[in-house]
Image (cartoon, rainbow, N blue to C red; front, side, top):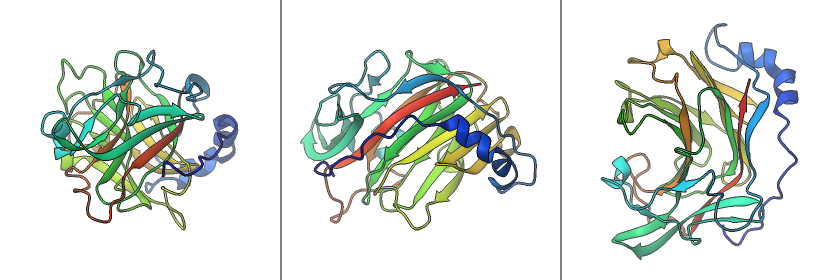
Length: 279
C-alpha cells in the first residue's frame, strides 16, 4: 500500500450544502426507527486538521500513546505503538499510520496511535474524518473518542464513542458503537454498516458522528445509518461532557483475531483530514 499513489486531497468538505440538501431525507429514512430521530445542522468549523505539513503530526494537537499497553491495551492486541516515522508520518497532505511486521521491544508488530487528550476536547458537534482503510485478517483501524475525565473515571465509566471500527478481513463492513457502564466491550451498543458494491480499502470515505445532549448519529459519507439515544443503552448515559479524539491502527486483538499467513505487511491507514463542527 505504501507504494500506491495517494488520491489528491479534494476541495474542502462542503458539509453545510450537503446537509441542507438531504436533511429532510435523513430525518425520515436514515435510521431504522420510526420518526423520532434527531438531525441537527453543525456548520461552525472549529477543528480543520488537513495534514498539510510533512513530517511528524502537529504536536499542538496530537500526542502519541507508546508501548504495548496493559494486556494489549485491554484487547490482547499484538502491536507496539511507537512515535517513529516508520509508523506515523505526514506526507503529501495525508497522515499515514503504518503497521509493520517486525520484532520490536518484545512485540512482533509495530504501529501508531494518536490522541488529542488535554489538547482538543469537545462536548457535542459533528466529528468526521476522511480515510482510506487498510485490509487483511487481524488488521484493526479505529477512529474514536474517550471521555476527557478518564483519569478520574476509569473506562468504561468515562464513556467511549467508536465512530469507525473495522475488521480488515471484512473490507465492506464497519461498526459504530458506544461503551459505558453496563454496556462495554462485547456488550457495547453497536450497529454495522455495509458498503454496497465497493470496499473501504480501495478509496476514501468520510466517517462521522453528529452528537448532541440526547443522541449520537452515525454517518458514512452522506448516509445516516444509526442513531443511539439514552433509551437505547442499558446503563447510564455518559455522553454529556467533553471527549477527546483517537486515531489508531491495531494488529490482532479480541475484535479481529490475529493476522494469518495471507495478511500482507506493511498495512497503512491513510487519513486525509479530521474535522469538527459546532452549531
